[in-house]
Amino acid sequence: MRVTFHGHACVTVRHGGQVVAVDPGAFSDAAGALRDADTVLLTHQHPDHLDVAALGAALASRPSLAVWGSEAVADVLRGALPTDTTSRVHVVAPGDRLDLGGLEVVVGGGLHAVIHDDVPRLTNLAYLVRGDGGALWHPGDSFDEPAPGLLRGERLDVLLAPVSAPWLRLGETIDFVRSLDPWVVVPVHDAVLSDAGHALVDRLLGEQRTGGTYAYRPLAVGESLDVAAGSLDGAADAAAGALRREHPEFGEVALLEADETVPPRPEEAVADVARSDPAR
Image 1: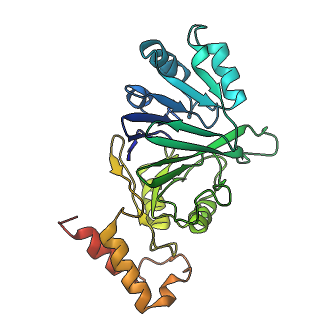
Image 2: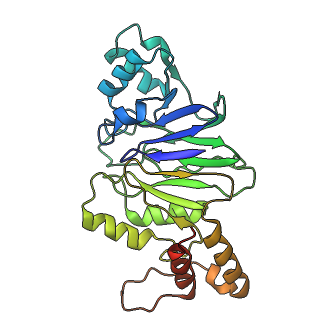
Image 3: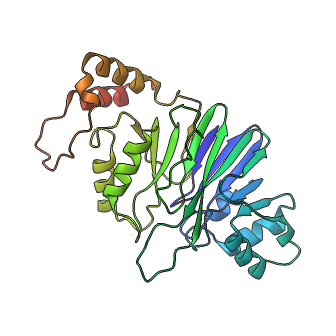
């Protein structure tokens, strides 16, 4: 299963001949994400997650393209798209499952995170996408986690973690990551960040700054990573596992370091060595 980042909250997932695009919005390369997509999954109707013009063009050029989202998303699209394309807009709700050939999708979520008490909360879906034994969670604009039992007792392979938004405090992202404890964290929802903001997020959310044992993988627009169950970043995982067996205290949640002069902890040194290995 190959995951490609198209900017902000948009990714494509490829496996078994299927291409699924999630949240092609106005802050992302929506046209690129939709170019060869078979299915589009939409978490909600905010423009940074749904570029109606780009989606309409894709539906017109790809007769087999299907779109899935909430009833509210379907209402928006039915009012904006040509009538000959709206039959390919389908409604899903939390608990629904989609079989997309080589990919399985389980719908989760509930409501958009609170922006302000005066701003109504929209329906926000989240999606668990499985393929090749690996699983990816896209929470949309929420910190909703997969329903109990959905991961079948296995560690989540990839979490797309929102890092900047009017509804978001980065400490909440850190707690979200710690709670799910995935193999790999990919920061998303980052279009409003400056270069300095990205650097700050990378420093604070990096796995050795938050007490986690996951691999932290910021992706450039158009960059991909391959996902198979538990196999991502195998060298670093093996090194971290051996270190934690020798020093179980490293598995405890550590406080964030506010002072850059603090020497790196031993597990940071291990991760740095793994990253610098030219064989990886």
